[in-house]
Length: 412
Ligand code: NIG
Ligand code: FE
Image 1 (cartoon, protein in one colour):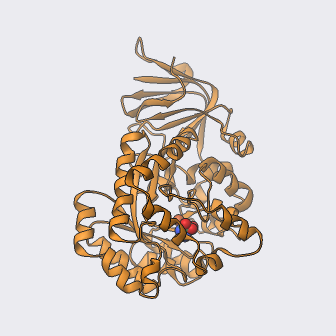
Image 2 (tube, rainbow, N blue to C red):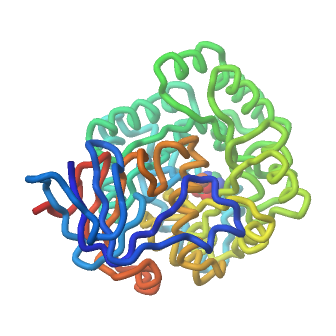
Image 3 (tube, helix red, strand yellow):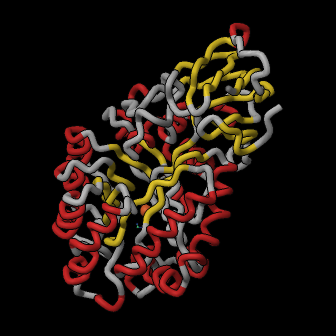
């Protein structure tokens, strides 16, 4: 048992997916308390009514705000090397696509990842994940996609698996071998896909549970809609749930493909059109927006308000990666969604909790404050969630609770 007392504002986020128009109307409770029974939320209500058993340890929220642990549902946090020079080239006028076409971009990181050992990848990612946890993230999706051959893609997935032993953050792995075609197979994308979609490879990923999802970058510099369809339908035969990088730079009808294959999420969506919005709605696909990426690249944001108006359960994630978004902080990205996409603080909290849980097929486990839900909670040192977003860029996290255990901050 653990009691969290003296909460000024408890955000009672319901289990996802929360439809767009409902996202700004979340119940809050003032002067609240929460009781945790082992790994689950056992009770919440007014602090005056809180009746913990004798000797129950207490976490004093000190008049702060409490909400579900954050869920970063789209990242590329396992990587080696750096691309600060590309950041500077873009400031001087080059675009992300131009840099990719000139041999930079993803392929640069691929060289560094291939040169790294599995141990090396683990050592590089571990402190990043630790900092994400300190910012309130309790569930984190990580993709492969910088190996681009069978051995190095598996090396990345195995690194994600091994990282789990080093962190209380729940890690969720996605197979993104179809991130782009590797240099040695340039112009022969289908032949490359034959190798990473080989039955023995997909069977191993399934049997060893090395990934839950399969992702593909559907883009002019990566894979066509037809190729993406092949990747996702083939992987699905091996139990990998489809999701994709859709409509980021080029409008190619990738959202329609997401709907067609029943993808759990369609991510990016900077160039989504009305047809794509209708398709996601029909299919129940969760739109995952990545405002840190457009902010980092200095390009236009996805039409977030239109997606919310269409009543879609919008989710938010960092897209943390060395090329298009070297931003680790999900709270910072939520603040960017407020100022650049005009989402309200309540909407961004729902997008980074309940709806992100839905995007990771975990809506019954995490992302909400409800009796029986996993006790993943964040305690902020600000009195309410509006003040949190207002203090854009400062880490306001006082404590983090994962599966009922205090993993950041102190209990007393
Ligand atoms: O989500 N879009 C494709 N993948 C990443 C970028 C990866 C990279 O540039 O290294 C993204 O933006
Ligand atoms: Fe991405």
